[in-house]
Structures are given as C-alpha cells and as structure tokens.
Length: 215
Ligand SMILES: [Zn+2]
Image (cartoon, rainbow, N blue to C red; front, side, top):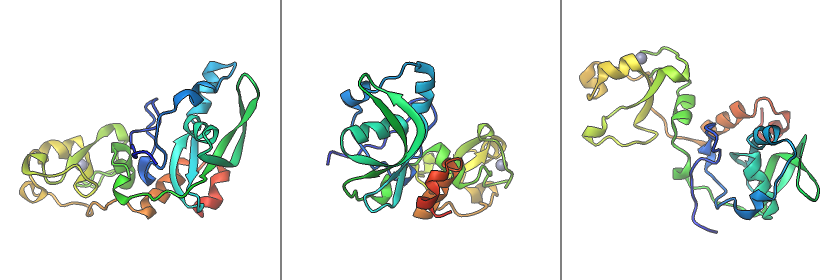
C-alpha cells in the first residue's frame, strides 16, 4: 500500500474525524470526476455526508465523506455495506450513496495515526475548559499546551487540552503548577474507546451505523 496520509478528507471545513486513523489514502484522482449529478448544490452537500468506514474485519476504523467513500468503491478498495436512500447520477447510471463501507483488504491502523485535531480534542474534553471546568461553545474555546511550547511541550494528545480564553490568558506561558491551575483531568491519549464515541456522535442520526458501533 502507498504511504499513509492523514490530512482531513473533507475540504469544506467540516473536519472529518481522522480519529480512528485514516485508513484510506491516495488522491481521489480521475475516479472522482466520474461522479456527476444534475443538481450541483444538492450533490455537493450529499457528497459531504459522513460514511462509516469498516476494516475488512468489520471493525469501525474511520469516518469519511460520501465522495471519498465512492472513490474507494470505484477503485475496488471498499464495498458498500449499508446504503442511503439517495442516489448520485453519473453519465451512465445512478449510484446508491453508501452509509457504511468496508475495506476489502485488512489495514493495520497504527495508534499514532489517530488524528490530533482541535475538533477531536474539544470532543474528548467535552467542550469543557480543563482549568475552570466550565462548558463553552466550541467557538469560545482554544487549545492550551499544558507544558508550554516554549518549555518544550509537544503538540500531542497528552499535552493539549480544551481551554477557555480567560484561563488561557491568565495561564500564559506557564505550567499549570506555576499558574496555580489544576487540570480537571489528565489529558488522555486517543483510544479505541474515544474513537468509537466520536463515531457515535457523528453517526447518531444514521440508524445504519448502529450495529457496527454497538449502541
Ligand atoms: Zn477556563
């Protein structure tokens, strides 16, 4: 397989949870251009709908967008396990849009590939400032390096937490101890448990995901 790449799949600002590890790599290439629809607007939003990606073993490993999922199907990398009622039309025929796809070959997903993103950290921390313990809308939260970057703190799951702007300002370039702050809880690395939770949050409207996510 080609080198794994972990950039967001969704180019429209709705960051897809690389969370479970981007199992699928490669450019969308010519296959993508074969997907057409008479209603560009509707098609655009449909193509961004989330699709659950299962490993060959049926283990849920990722969430991608319809567009990417259909490319994988066209390339013969994945097959649809569950379908939406919606269709997209190519010049030749109509394609049912997938809701769940499964990779045909097993992929080993390395732990470190689990996406570190602002969105995933806010989800892990449940939009709660880890210093004052208050819940905020995502727009009122930032990410704080527990050990500041200037002190060699890394941008990692274990060193980044959700933080309100107030706490972030008063903490400044200090460690929590120096600033007299206490973390609500130790920032945990991304686990299978966390990624399942993220997938459930994303897929909560789609009944077809349930049996694969056990909820
Ligand atoms: Zn705060």
